[in-house]
Length: 493
Image (cartoon, rainbow, N blue to C red; front, side, top):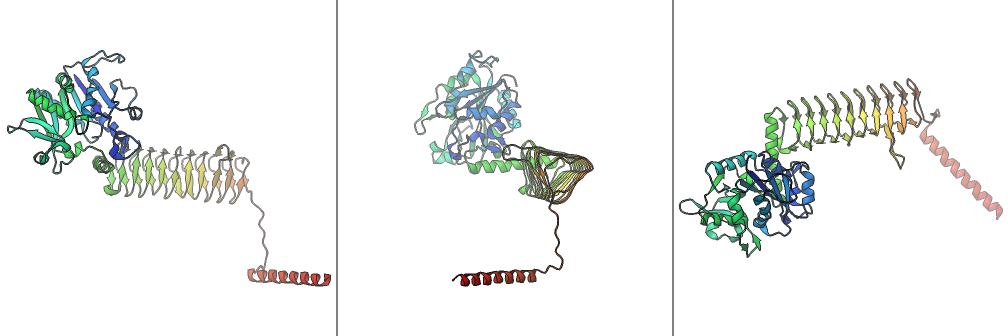
């Protein structure tokens, strides 16, 4: 957008979160708060985005935002002196297009500046566009985004004269009884002409109670100097919810989660119980996929069409094909090809690559392994650091013994191998194509193709063996030995 600068206030300490993690880095539906606000304003295509940060959170913020975006400029607020001081830190950049150390061309003071907080992640690009459009169409010098709330506690109140003109914004701590009854509140989002902003921001007084400079005090200066000041009333209060506590974070997450689920359902995804389903913002799901209750899908997961996921499944950063079934299982960073079936109670750790129509059954764990098309690992197995071909049958209780106490080793099983139950494969090892491994074997050497390998002790059978008689015989033998020892002892005496 031409002649637009954005200032995002992200320097607050967030002490009410009671967390060692900076407030703006707390996740909301899979993304940090700052990422939500940044992505919203980025869609406006401003000339510059000035991020006011503190020394403690700048490193974390820069880690989650795009590193190659030359529009982003970090401004430090070294002391917590309030929102007014935070904007004042940006003055050299707003008034001087050739600030030392920044190569990109800067906007001059004739444009507009959009100011908003990093802890309002629900704000939409549509709302910001409407604010900027009204500001410019009506040739305002200051336009404030406001909203009416039934319970405005904690928010700054919009004070108006008898003719409806905005005269000031009074904060909760400074409001009198009459002012506290005002329902119209300040959202903390402003569109202001840059030139008068730069002039007035220098004159903000220090609030004696809080020892801070309030950005809201600029409204009084605009009013006193008859600079055209208006508001845009927002119909959706949820958009401007500020997050200062874990409770407010949870409330905002619930709102955002519902929006995500509604969008998915409108695009052809069936969600049986939205109240018990958690899906992050960056998840992509194809049409006709069914999500059953108790399912959580996180990160940058991509899911194809006609899948059935859940109930009680956790899927994170996975790529899943079409017609996949995942029941009551946990998957982290895996690739699942079309037609595969997972679970129930399977655990796929990072690096599992499951082929088409493969089967990973109950109580099976897979780690850093490729499972070929049509291969079945149906129950009670551990497959780690392994490469399995197609059409393999893995019996119950098969373990790839991949760790020798120092290093991990590879197991390779070629196509159409049959492995019986309770087999241990001591890596590194290769099982050739169409080989058969007998149940109960511990195999430590490579097995050639089309071979049978059995490694277990010879079976012993004692006929006419009755446990009760055997135990009685053993007891009689023990008593006889005791009598002989007693006689020998008496003879010696």
